[in-house]
Image (tube, rainbow, N blue to C red; front, side):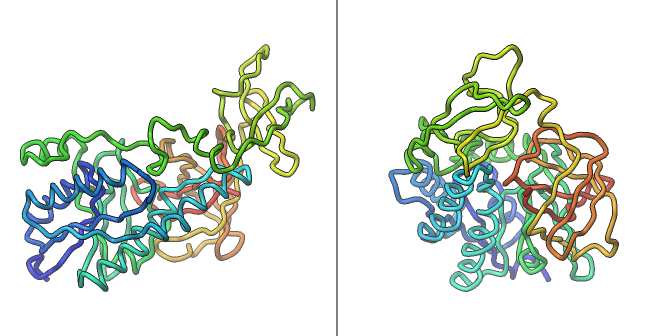
Length: 353
């Protein structure tokens, strides 16, 4: 069907990527509206600024701009999850959770039911391929910007209502388009950090504000000796090297966190290399794999390279992952994303236990 009859809500965050997404789809002949989620109540500059910037872009390109008040949902699904995960000694991934419950949850519902749109579009760098009604997520043209890792929870139902226009562009091309079209967001800085922790506050300070100080011991994992003190286990993440603040003959890394006994275990770099992980709540983009045991490339954090591993299905939603080579700092609470052996397609992913 021709794009002229299709109505699309572009999820606009006030950044250059989502702004250019709106521009591209408008040029392709879609009937588009801008849609921004209002996510935080406190004097969050990011949210206020995002809404204003998105509105400016919509005004300039001549489309309606809608705001969905999702503050309550965002608090419950993302912020509470973030605090709870840290308080249990794990490292959360709020963007993946936000994609699942906010963007492809409440925002998609709002676009389809309230705004009567056919699709939502986002500024993610990913490619969507469709063959005979089955959708596949492919890595973007710009391999450095590729954001498929963040999309592990999407379902066929979600994908049937989604457009990813930026997957076929390099980031530089997107910036150039925004500048040439004088979009008000053309020079906006990338948001790298947790969007609801407002600079200059650091994540650690934010956590302390909500979780309070809980002093405890820092212990050398190889000797069992107490070598220092901490003010809260939630301030540490597996693999962390900076900020341990203990003088030692060699560089120390966080090896594990014991929330029950309020202990942070530290050790040498080799103490946190491991060949194995178990991922739970796994979502397979194209259905559960036919084989019980197979090889795939596995990525254990957003900015790491996908590495060869053997996957063995434990049951419908968990998988045992055995890497060919030891991996540095496999972190509980983070996402393991699985890719095809040619590193082109996202197979799915789950949460590292």
